[in-house]
Image 1 (cartoon, rainbow, N blue to C red):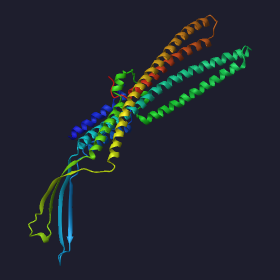
Image 2 (image 1 turned 90 degrees about the vertical axis):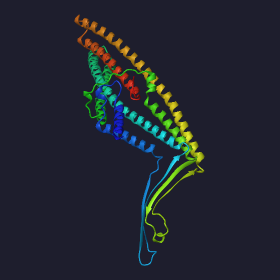
Image 3 (image 1 turned 45 degrees about the vertical axis):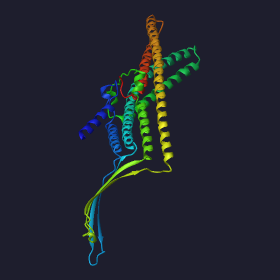
Image 4 (image 1 turned 90 degrees about the horizontal axis):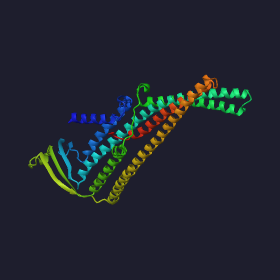
Length: 403
């Protein structure tokens, strides 16, 4: 039985680790301490649930006592005895059955919640990996933008010196360069913050990990495998059994009593034929009359109704989450399409500007601007793709399995 319990826990731990369609080296992305905390939570849940499922079984009471008496003149009488007794309910109007079912629902609900929290933490770590990659692309984009800003300042300064341009245009170009340089510094600061946040979740080096390639899962699978919905459904089931247990608490119960006693006899009774070793046994039927019974039962019914309503609300939330993310993916696809069109336009302009530069009608600076603008739109496409992956990750961290 012990081996079976160990295997069961190992199986559960393995099921918590995997994140569908992700690179193999990301399944152990969390640090050793973080993983250990979840393992302890899971093992404690199993032990607490086992304890709860057997809570209806009363303990066997072992008792030993020793008495000293000065009743008899001239000496002190010492007597001792021990007893084994039990008072065990065998019928509680269904309460025992509901207690066992309640413990099972409690176990499953807590296990699902632990699984959800672990997957959310893994998702946070993977999200940071995406953001690190996005940050590097944004820095590349900003450096190209700053290069264009410098060219723009140089061209406007020449025009200003030639009296062809008002100073306000040159001021605006200088201000834009300063703003872009400040944005680059912000990105570099954000990069440090992301690395620090990742180090709190994982012992691995982020630059050595590959980000996964996620795809949109079906709405049907998202609903059927959603861990939040599964947890709330189990909590509603737990609340239903809790209500039944509360009702049974105020109904008739049958208990068996038994006691075995072995002890020294009082010298006064030594010749009476009373046994030193004997049994007491019987049964009892009981039913409490409690002034708070009605309120207690009604409160448990309200709790059950609330849990059931929470399930309905969660179903709506799950549908809305999926629709919102799917719509956001559509918008990001359109942004990628626009960036791709712009890239083609800049590629054409770059080719034309190069030819004009060879003919002496354009400068090498004009060629550099077009080349940088084309590269910027290429980077934008990659950035939007990462934004899509981050959105998809919000779905993945909430599901148990993806088919």
